[in-house]
Amino acid sequence: MGGTIARLAEQGHRVLLLDMTNGEPTPFGDPETRAKEAAAAAKILGVERRLLGLPNRMVVHSIEARHQVAGVIREHQAEIVFTPYFEDAHPDHIATTRIVEDARFDAKLSKIDLPGDPIYPRWLFYYYCTHLRHVANPSFLIDTAGYEQRKREAIVAYETQFVKPEKNRRVVDWLEAQGRYFGSRVGTDAAEPFFTKEPIGLNGFSSLV
Image 1: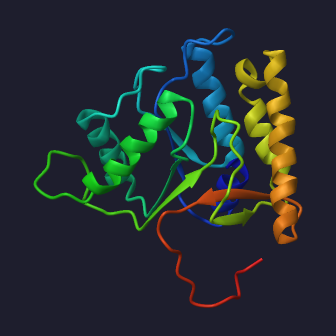
Image 2: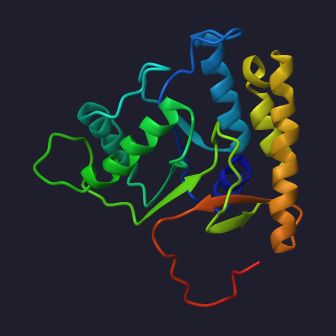
């Protein structure tokens, strides 16, 4: 959802990217390199970034993890939260989604030892980063035309993930093709898909693509 992130930031939204893990170990990376890559990607997108520090490959849906994320939601006073789509083959992604869904609820609780003021984010949206051969059936699309290059630059900023591993380079091309396809569904050059379990209310049609 890099195009959406860049667009929201440019529109004046205060966007925070929360990395659940440092992404290590990987064949070409190390914690220091991954931190530099994450910082570079955030700078390209024009957003803030924070590391939660859960163990990569071992993310577990727990009370502790829920409260850690809820604390970040409260400190940031997040009104909109994005989390991975809930059908996935990656255990860390599935656990992250469960954690974030429950953290949204926990963030509103009073008389709980968490930083920041209570808040219940109004919206929880799911983005698609699935490791399944899953065909997205989104609830809505965000027009990301004009942000394609910035998205690509943010992705390849992760050189240890999408440049050095030859087999992963095709992911960048695949994401660009996906963007063009979803853009064609709404008459733009590029778009990104999202899913919601809750209905979106409109007060008019002026912002529809």
